[in-house]
Length: 420
Length: 181
Image (cartoon, rainbow over all chains, first blue to last red; front, side):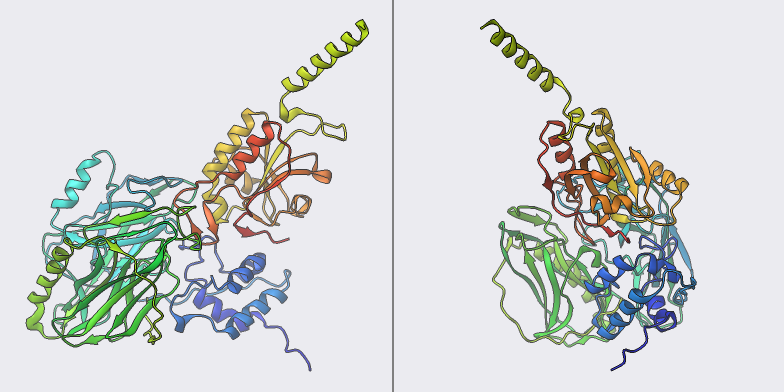
């Protein structure tokens, strides 16, 4: 049997272009550029290890993951490519089109520190919240966001929310000498992320057609920045561009339905499940979900009437962003369940505490959450849906501290694949 | 009898002198100068190594105050002196920058990733490794970063060596970017 000839650069160019260069380019969010064939060969050992361990490319969506054949092709190319081969360009994937209708800016002067530190609630990530300018001069219907910053490698995610200025201004006043403030960005019953969460690889985020995020007139946008210090101080400037829905175009505002767990507790070494159930009182379209979860969470899923429709099985706070659910419409009376698989043992490599310790977390808008960005199918239900958002948050303030329950094997899984 | 006392006093005095001598300047078994040295393997574009730069800056300063040299070894072909000097300066690293394009130091110390830390005596040809391993636990694995390091293995290794404990220790393995030999 004759072995097939080793793959050439032409065989792998498209795979590298679509899956690597989007992030690994100059000023991209990933640490080094992979825009020349020689960039791969120079790091072939490292890249091979990451591909073999399924760490790269970091797609969570199964449909986008490399098949075994794709992996094998790239691994063989890396193994056989000569260091002396001519360097060739790996083209960047075609960027999404975007129309900039409004631009919002953060106040200047914040510097991302060179290293992290303990925060006021221990174990949380490095966070800062900024008020963006200007305020909305009219009701804004946002079809897409685009976020650009001077520190793409340090930014982990940006959670967007709107506010009339009252709460955020109070936060800002606590630190009058520096831009922004070191607190999470919830605004009353409006959690950071209500207008979407932009993550590492989705700095341009488009709401599915027919829906939009709505910002009331005179409100300002606040954003909760989660960042990872990179070893060097970085002056931080950023802009948030909005593409608006055309005035003539029919579109429905997305309202937040929070499936949140306000407070939970786990003993050292304990593993188990936390769940939040909700029965929809009306027909809903749910095109997006956002997830809030920390490092002791192993997996997050969402089920509709017992069928799993969304799942991230290897949860990492990196994935704290807004995800698209392809055409999910639920009928009145449908039960939706958000499930968090908690692992507070040593076996969880992301557990911040070694050895693990007893923990308890709480947050008014939810220490854990899968948030449904939903629109009423019947336009007459819009104001009722807005009330539901408030009622759910108010009701959950009376919730007891949740304890973990034992893991049950649930075989009813056929998740729809989320998209970024 | 008197001569016995003389010998005893001489032994006590010399032992005392030996104790007063700084541990990092003790003579090695084979007789030549074997000062303790530290080495850290680095790469300008390894995010894990760069994330630990503030720690390395402090450790380099600490080692310098103890009269211990730290080698900042860049084991990649194609890097220039100017590039690595710029990197070390920009990240506030303290130590002597060493280019290692042919991986001589990598092979001598058996390094595998950046950043990997060493405490050793001797020269490149006959290095006696006292510590090999991670700097701290900031990264548990590639992509799995803690908010802050809580276990500082490299610092402890330096302190042990300064205290005169030359037991060879293999620390938890370093997590980082593979060194391409």
